[in-house]
Amino acid sequence: MRRVIRAVSLALLAVCLTASAAFAMEIKLGIVTTPGSAQYIVAEKFKELVEERSKGDITVSIFHSASLGNETEILQQIQMNAVNMGVITLGPFDAFVPEVKVVNFPFLFKSYDHVSKILDGPLGKEVLKDIEKAGFKGLAFSENGFRNLSNNVRPVHSVEDVDGLKIRVMESALHKELWRVLGANPTPMGWPIYSELEQGVIDGQENPVSVIKVFKLYEVQKYLSLTGHVYSAHIDVANLGWFNGLDPEVQKMLSDSMYEAAVNERNWNRENEAGFLAELEKEGMIIDKNPDKASFRAKAVELKNMELFTKDPSTAALLDKFL
Ligand code: PAF
Image 1 (cartoon, rainbow, N blue to C red):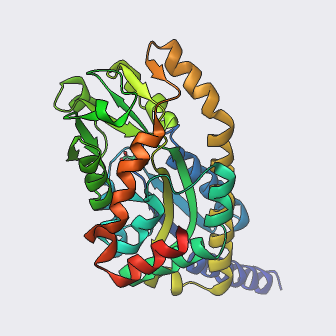
Image 2 (image 1 turned 45 degrees about the vertical axis):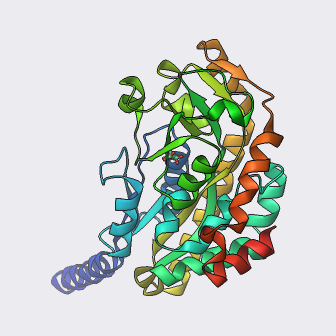
Protein backbone atom coordinates (compact mmCIF):
# COMPACT_ATOMS: atom_id res chain seq x y z
CA MET A 1 0.00 0.00 0.00
CA ARG A 2 2.78 2.39 0.99
CA ARG A 3 4.45 1.74 -2.31
CA VAL A 4 1.27 2.63 -4.19
CA ILE A 5 0.84 5.87 -2.21
CA ARG A 6 4.48 6.80 -2.89
CA ALA A 7 4.13 6.07 -6.60
CA VAL A 8 0.91 8.13 -6.82
CA SER A 9 2.52 11.02 -4.91
CA LEU A 10 5.55 10.97 -7.20
CA ALA A 11 3.31 10.91 -10.25
CA LEU A 12 1.32 13.90 -8.91
CA LEU A 13 4.51 15.79 -8.16
CA ALA A 14 5.77 15.14 -11.67
CA VAL A 15 2.47 16.43 -13.13
CA CYS A 16 2.68 19.57 -10.98
CA LEU A 17 6.30 20.23 -11.93
CA THR A 18 5.57 19.72 -15.62
CA ALA A 19 2.55 22.06 -15.43
CA SER A 20 4.49 24.82 -13.68
CA ALA A 21 7.48 24.33 -15.97
CA ALA A 22 5.17 24.62 -18.98
CA PHE A 23 3.78 27.88 -17.63
CA ALA A 24 7.06 29.44 -16.48
CA MET A 25 8.02 32.39 -18.63
CA GLU A 26 10.76 35.01 -18.55
CA ILE A 27 9.96 38.41 -20.03
CA LYS A 28 12.99 40.35 -21.23
CA LEU A 29 12.43 44.10 -20.93
CA GLY A 30 14.92 46.69 -22.22
CA ILE A 31 15.50 50.33 -21.24
CA VAL A 32 18.35 52.69 -22.07
CA THR A 33 18.45 54.50 -18.71
CA THR A 34 19.78 53.59 -15.26
CA PRO A 35 18.17 52.59 -11.92
CA GLY A 36 16.47 55.67 -10.42
CA SER A 37 15.34 56.96 -13.84
CA ALA A 38 11.73 57.32 -14.96
CA GLN A 39 11.93 54.28 -17.28
CA TYR A 40 13.41 52.17 -14.51
CA ILE A 41 10.61 53.13 -12.14
CA VAL A 42 8.08 51.91 -14.71
CA ALA A 43 10.01 48.69 -15.34
CA GLU A 44 10.52 47.95 -11.66
CA LYS A 45 6.82 48.41 -10.79
CA PHE A 46 5.77 46.32 -13.79
CA LYS A 47 8.13 43.54 -12.66
CA GLU A 48 6.77 43.67 -9.10
CA LEU A 49 3.11 43.52 -10.23
CA VAL A 50 3.60 40.77 -12.82
CA GLU A 51 5.66 38.52 -10.58
CA GLU A 52 3.16 38.97 -7.73
CA ARG A 53 0.08 38.43 -9.90
CA SER A 54 1.49 35.41 -11.70
CA LYS A 55 2.67 34.02 -8.34
CA GLY A 56 6.18 33.84 -9.72
CA ASP A 57 5.28 31.86 -12.86
CA ILE A 58 6.28 34.88 -14.94
CA THR A 59 9.55 36.64 -14.18
CA VAL A 60 10.62 39.97 -15.65
CA SER A 61 14.32 40.61 -16.35
CA ILE A 62 15.17 44.29 -16.75
CA PHE A 63 18.07 45.08 -19.10
CA HIS A 64 19.04 48.67 -18.28
CA SER A 65 21.79 51.29 -18.65
CA ALA A 66 22.07 50.86 -22.43
CA SER A 67 23.29 47.25 -21.98
CA LEU A 68 21.22 46.44 -25.11
CA GLY A 69 22.33 49.57 -27.00
CA ASN A 70 20.52 52.86 -27.53
CA GLU A 71 16.72 53.22 -27.82
CA THR A 72 16.65 52.78 -31.61
CA GLU A 73 18.59 49.53 -31.20
CA ILE A 74 16.30 48.32 -28.40
CA LEU A 75 13.28 48.98 -30.64
CA GLN A 76 14.89 46.91 -33.41
CA GLN A 77 15.45 44.06 -30.95
CA ILE A 78 11.82 44.26 -29.81
CA GLN A 79 10.70 44.11 -33.44
CA MET A 80 12.70 40.87 -33.81
CA ASN A 81 11.47 39.62 -30.41
CA ALA A 82 15.06 39.20 -29.22
CA VAL A 83 13.74 41.40 -26.41
CA ASN A 84 10.01 41.08 -25.56
CA MET A 85 9.26 44.49 -24.12
CA GLY A 86 10.61 47.99 -23.53
CA VAL A 87 9.92 51.40 -22.01
CA ILE A 88 11.12 53.68 -24.79
CA THR A 89 11.10 57.46 -25.24
CA LEU A 90 8.61 58.44 -27.93
CA GLY A 91 11.20 60.43 -29.95
CA PRO A 92 13.02 57.48 -31.57
CA PHE A 93 9.68 55.82 -32.48
CA ASP A 94 9.09 58.23 -35.35
CA ALA A 95 11.67 56.41 -37.51
CA PHE A 96 9.45 53.29 -37.19
CA VAL A 97 5.98 54.83 -37.21
CA PRO A 98 5.89 58.43 -38.57
CA GLU A 99 2.49 59.26 -37.02
CA VAL A 100 3.72 59.06 -33.41
CA LYS A 101 5.70 62.27 -33.76
CA VAL A 102 2.39 64.11 -33.47
CA VAL A 103 2.55 63.53 -29.68
CA ASN A 104 5.89 65.40 -29.67
CA PHE A 105 4.49 68.41 -31.54
CA PRO A 106 5.87 71.49 -29.73
CA PHE A 107 3.64 73.22 -27.19
CA LEU A 108 0.83 70.73 -27.82
CA PHE A 109 -0.08 70.13 -24.17
CA LYS A 110 -0.93 72.88 -21.69
CA SER A 111 -0.41 70.91 -18.48
CA TYR A 112 0.00 67.42 -17.06
CA ASP A 113 -3.78 67.20 -16.58
CA HIS A 114 -4.20 67.95 -20.26
CA VAL A 115 -1.65 65.22 -21.10
CA SER A 116 -3.48 62.59 -19.03
CA LYS A 117 -6.85 63.54 -20.50
CA ILE A 118 -5.60 63.18 -24.08
CA LEU A 119 -3.20 60.25 -23.80
CA ASP A 120 -5.50 58.14 -21.61
CA GLY A 121 -8.39 58.92 -23.97
CA PRO A 122 -9.30 57.90 -27.55
CA LEU A 123 -6.43 59.83 -29.19
CA GLY A 124 -3.83 58.13 -27.03
CA LYS A 125 -5.43 54.77 -27.85
CA GLU A 126 -5.25 55.63 -31.55
CA VAL A 127 -1.49 56.26 -31.27
CA LEU A 128 -0.97 52.99 -29.40
CA LYS A 129 -2.91 51.20 -32.14
CA ASP A 130 -0.87 52.95 -34.88
CA ILE A 131 2.38 51.43 -33.71
CA GLU A 132 1.04 47.94 -34.46
CA LYS A 133 1.93 48.70 -38.10
CA ALA A 134 5.57 48.36 -37.11
CA GLY A 135 5.07 45.18 -35.08
CA PHE A 136 4.74 46.80 -31.65
CA LYS A 137 1.96 46.32 -29.11
CA GLY A 138 1.50 49.67 -27.33
CA LEU A 139 0.43 49.07 -23.73
CA ALA A 140 0.63 52.48 -22.03
CA PHE A 141 2.24 55.90 -21.94
CA SER A 142 4.64 56.81 -19.14
CA GLU A 143 6.75 59.97 -19.14
CA ASN A 144 9.88 62.00 -18.60
CA GLY A 145 7.88 65.24 -18.45
CA PHE A 146 8.22 68.52 -20.36
CA ARG A 147 11.59 69.05 -22.04
CA ASN A 148 13.78 72.08 -21.25
CA LEU A 149 16.93 73.45 -22.87
CA SER A 150 20.30 73.44 -21.10
CA ASN A 151 23.66 74.62 -22.46
CA ASN A 152 27.12 75.75 -21.52
CA VAL A 153 27.54 78.81 -23.68
CA ARG A 154 25.04 81.47 -22.51
CA PRO A 155 21.70 82.00 -20.77
CA VAL A 156 18.83 81.43 -23.19
CA HIS A 157 15.82 83.64 -22.58
CA SER A 158 14.24 84.01 -26.00
CA VAL A 159 14.59 81.99 -29.18
CA GLU A 160 17.18 84.43 -30.61
CA ASP A 161 19.60 83.26 -27.90
CA VAL A 162 19.55 79.73 -29.37
CA ASP A 163 21.31 80.93 -32.52
CA GLY A 164 24.10 78.55 -33.58
CA LEU A 165 24.18 76.46 -30.38
CA LYS A 166 25.18 72.86 -31.01
CA ILE A 167 22.35 70.98 -29.35
CA ARG A 168 22.14 67.21 -28.98
CA VAL A 169 18.70 65.97 -30.04
CA MET A 170 17.11 62.52 -29.92
CA GLU A 171 17.33 60.32 -33.00
CA SER A 172 14.09 61.74 -34.37
CA ALA A 173 13.34 63.69 -37.53
CA LEU A 174 10.91 65.92 -35.63
CA HIS A 175 13.39 66.90 -32.93
CA LYS A 176 16.11 67.59 -35.50
CA GLU A 177 13.84 69.79 -37.58
CA LEU A 178 12.45 71.59 -34.53
CA TRP A 179 15.91 72.68 -33.35
CA ARG A 180 16.91 73.68 -36.87
CA VAL A 181 13.83 75.90 -37.08
CA LEU A 182 14.65 77.36 -33.65
CA GLY A 183 18.10 78.38 -34.96
CA ALA A 184 20.32 75.73 -33.36
CA ASN A 185 22.78 73.35 -34.95
CA PRO A 186 21.00 70.08 -33.99
CA THR A 187 23.08 66.93 -33.54
CA PRO A 188 21.10 63.64 -33.29
CA MET A 189 22.65 61.17 -30.86
CA GLY A 190 21.49 58.20 -28.81
CA TRP A 191 21.65 58.24 -25.03
CA PRO A 192 23.81 58.62 -22.85
CA ILE A 193 25.51 61.95 -23.65
CA TYR A 194 27.35 62.96 -20.44
CA SER A 195 30.86 62.65 -21.88
CA GLU A 196 29.93 64.52 -25.09
CA LEU A 197 28.71 67.41 -22.93
CA GLU A 198 31.77 67.19 -20.71
CA GLN A 199 34.17 67.22 -23.65
CA GLY A 200 32.31 70.03 -25.39
CA VAL A 201 31.44 67.93 -28.47
CA ILE A 202 28.01 69.53 -28.02
CA ASP A 203 27.06 72.78 -26.28
CA GLY A 204 23.76 71.66 -24.89
CA GLN A 205 20.84 69.28 -24.81
CA GLU A 206 17.16 69.31 -23.93
CA ASN A 207 15.43 67.07 -21.43
CA PRO A 208 12.98 67.18 -18.53
CA VAL A 209 14.35 68.13 -15.09
CA SER A 210 14.12 64.54 -13.80
CA VAL A 211 16.61 63.44 -16.48
CA ILE A 212 18.98 66.37 -15.81
CA LYS A 213 18.90 65.49 -12.11
CA VAL A 214 19.17 61.67 -12.35
CA PHE A 215 22.01 61.81 -14.92
CA LYS A 216 23.84 64.64 -13.07
CA LEU A 217 23.92 66.80 -16.18
CA TYR A 218 24.21 69.80 -13.82
CA GLU A 219 27.87 68.81 -13.48
CA VAL A 220 28.47 69.52 -17.17
CA GLN A 221 25.76 72.11 -17.99
CA LYS A 222 25.60 75.63 -16.64
CA TYR A 223 22.43 77.26 -17.98
CA LEU A 224 18.90 75.87 -17.92
CA SER A 225 15.82 77.52 -19.47
CA LEU A 226 12.42 76.09 -18.58
CA THR A 227 11.20 76.16 -22.16
CA GLY A 228 8.84 73.16 -21.72
CA HIS A 229 8.78 72.96 -25.52
CA VAL A 230 7.82 69.28 -25.94
CA TYR A 231 6.00 66.84 -23.71
CA SER A 232 8.22 63.77 -23.55
CA ALA A 233 6.34 60.49 -23.24
CA HIS A 234 7.62 56.94 -23.27
CA ILE A 235 5.65 54.24 -25.01
CA ASP A 236 5.59 51.03 -23.02
CA VAL A 237 5.68 48.35 -25.69
CA ALA A 238 5.85 44.65 -26.43
CA ASN A 239 6.55 42.66 -29.58
CA LEU A 240 3.10 42.38 -31.20
CA GLY A 241 3.31 38.75 -32.38
CA TRP A 242 4.69 37.55 -29.07
CA PHE A 243 2.04 39.43 -27.09
CA ASN A 244 -0.85 38.22 -29.27
CA GLY A 245 0.36 34.65 -28.89
CA LEU A 246 -0.09 34.75 -25.10
CA ASP A 247 -3.14 33.44 -23.29
CA PRO A 248 -5.81 36.24 -23.19
CA GLU A 249 -5.78 36.25 -19.39
CA VAL A 250 -2.02 36.74 -19.35
CA GLN A 251 -2.36 39.52 -21.97
CA LYS A 252 -4.86 41.32 -19.74
CA MET A 253 -2.69 40.93 -16.67
CA LEU A 254 0.34 42.32 -18.52
CA SER A 255 -1.67 45.26 -19.97
CA ASP A 256 -3.22 46.13 -16.60
CA SER A 257 0.13 45.84 -14.82
CA MET A 258 1.88 48.07 -17.38
CA TYR A 259 -0.86 50.71 -17.20
CA GLU A 260 -0.65 50.75 -13.40
CA ALA A 261 3.15 50.95 -13.52
CA ALA A 262 2.90 53.85 -15.99
CA VAL A 263 0.40 55.82 -13.88
CA ASN A 264 2.50 55.19 -10.75
CA GLU A 265 5.58 56.61 -12.56
CA ARG A 266 3.71 59.62 -13.96
CA ASN A 267 2.63 60.49 -10.40
CA TRP A 268 6.23 60.09 -9.19
CA ASN A 269 7.46 62.49 -11.87
CA ARG A 270 4.78 65.09 -11.27
CA GLU A 271 5.10 65.00 -7.46
CA ASN A 272 8.90 65.29 -7.54
CA GLU A 273 9.48 67.79 -10.34
CA ALA A 274 9.65 70.90 -8.10
CA GLY A 275 12.09 69.11 -5.77
CA PHE A 276 14.30 68.07 -8.71
CA LEU A 277 14.38 71.67 -9.91
CA ALA A 278 15.37 72.93 -6.45
CA GLU A 279 18.22 70.41 -6.43
CA LEU A 280 19.47 71.61 -9.83
CA GLU A 281 19.51 75.15 -8.47
CA LYS A 282 21.36 74.00 -5.36
CA GLU A 283 23.92 72.28 -7.58
CA GLY A 284 24.65 75.67 -9.15
CA MET A 285 22.72 75.68 -12.42
CA ILE A 286 21.64 79.15 -13.53
CA ILE A 287 17.94 78.70 -14.23
CA ASP A 288 15.65 80.93 -16.28
CA LYS A 289 12.26 79.91 -14.89
CA ASN A 290 10.31 82.21 -17.11
CA PRO A 291 11.83 82.26 -20.60
CA ASP A 292 10.02 83.92 -23.50
CA LYS A 293 8.10 80.81 -24.54
CA ALA A 294 6.02 82.80 -27.01
CA SER A 295 9.15 83.47 -29.09
CA PHE A 296 9.87 79.71 -29.22
CA ARG A 297 6.25 78.89 -30.01
CA ALA A 298 6.07 81.40 -32.87
CA LYS A 299 8.92 79.63 -34.70
CA ALA A 300 7.97 76.10 -33.70
CA VAL A 301 4.46 76.27 -35.19
CA GLU A 302 6.08 76.54 -38.64
CA LEU A 303 6.63 72.78 -38.40
CA LYS A 304 2.94 72.21 -39.00
CA ASN A 305 3.30 73.30 -42.62
CA MET A 306 6.48 71.38 -43.29
CA GLU A 307 6.84 68.11 -45.19
CA LEU A 308 7.40 66.33 -41.90
CA PHE A 309 3.71 66.76 -41.14
CA THR A 310 2.15 67.37 -44.55
CA LYS A 311 3.70 64.62 -46.71
CA ASP A 312 2.14 61.57 -45.07
CA PRO A 313 -1.69 61.93 -45.06
CA SER A 314 -2.24 59.83 -41.93
CA THR A 315 0.28 61.93 -39.96
CA ALA A 316 -1.40 65.14 -41.17
CA ALA A 317 -4.84 63.76 -40.23
CA LEU A 318 -3.68 62.72 -36.76
CA LEU A 319 -2.07 66.13 -36.13
CA ASP A 320 -5.37 67.82 -37.02
CA LYS A 321 -7.15 65.70 -34.43
CA PHE A 322 -4.59 66.64 -31.76
CA LEU A 323 -4.46 70.38 -32.49
O1 PAF B 1 16.95 62.52 -24.49
C1 PAF B 1 16.69 61.30 -24.48
O2 PAF B 1 17.26 60.51 -25.23
C2 PAF B 1 15.60 60.80 -23.55
O3 PAF B 1 14.83 61.85 -23.08
C3 PAF B 1 16.14 59.96 -22.38
C4 PAF B 1 17.21 60.69 -21.60
C5 PAF B 1 16.68 58.64 -22.89
C6 PAF B 1 15.05 59.66 -21.38
O4 PAF B 1 13.95 59.04 -21.92
